[in-house]
Amino acid sequence: MPPMYADYDYLIKLLALGDSGVGKTCFLHQYSEGVFHSRFISTVGIDFREKRLIYNSKGINHRIHLQLWDTAGQERFRSLTTSFFRDSMGFLLFFDITNEKSFLEVQNWIEQLKVHAYCENPDIILCGNKLDLDYLRVVNSQRAKTLAEKYDVPYIETSAYTGENVSKAVEMLLDRVMLRMESLSFPGRMLPVNVLPIENGQSEAPEERIRLEHATDKSKCNC
Image: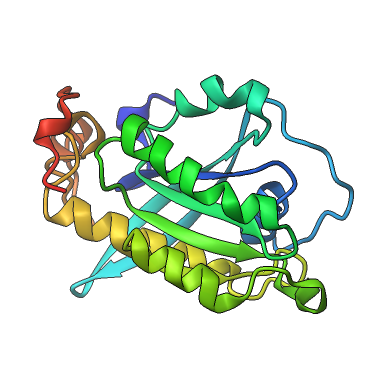
């Protein structure tokens, strides 16, 4: 089915990133399927999961089609990973609370986002994952919060194993993405400029419901 005839109002592309082994894939499985996959298989290149949901904004229900992109954390895939940054509308940035190195790499990931994402101040949620292993924690919450405050991004601790705060983290990011879309501050090619809510029984021309512009200049972002 061509995208213009899709049965949703918004296609939202979110990207999970962070070092290898921080739990990105398990997190996305938990969010999209409600299950935890214990077998570790490192992501090679790029993969994605999908989920449909209803998002209410100002009393209007919007049908959201989420694409949750899963990236490889290994250095050898870094150029491939960064090539997906510009087309993503929000970012879940993970570190492992039991792994100091993954936390130290957060600043590098943020700097790469500033260079390669749709603008210099993209929507990011910093996630300290593996909260179920709190007894093995080496990165305390205050250090993570301080780092998040430095970059002015929200911080949340999650567990892909138990599901704790998994949905909440995605919802936090979606709230920020939708707010930016409503304020028309995405670069044009990523923003459904005139997406309208579909009334019951309404018959609309899909090409009028969703129209994408093609500007790519970061200067068009009102970050």
